[in-house]
Image (cartoon, rainbow, N blue to C red; front, top):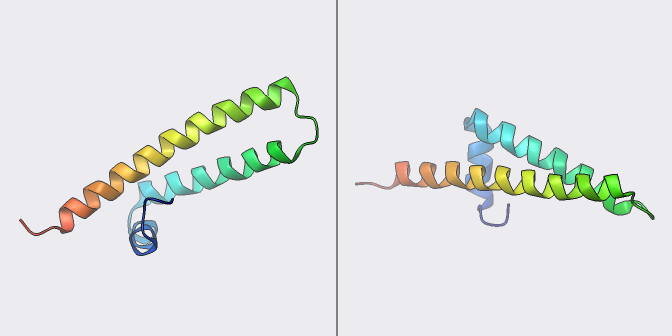
Length: 78
């Protein structure tokens, strides 16, 4: 996650179950996408799957960033 600093990401991975689940799912999609990209001749089904994975990854990333934003706001003194 380029928008999350490593400290915050690590803290959320250790303390927030939803964030950890989303992160793991994002990593799994990333790995599957790499597998598809490594194929010499991806099938049309592979290309369709890759598009679906990219959309899912984006959704997961958006949700993780929302969790991080809420976490930051909770830490800011009022």
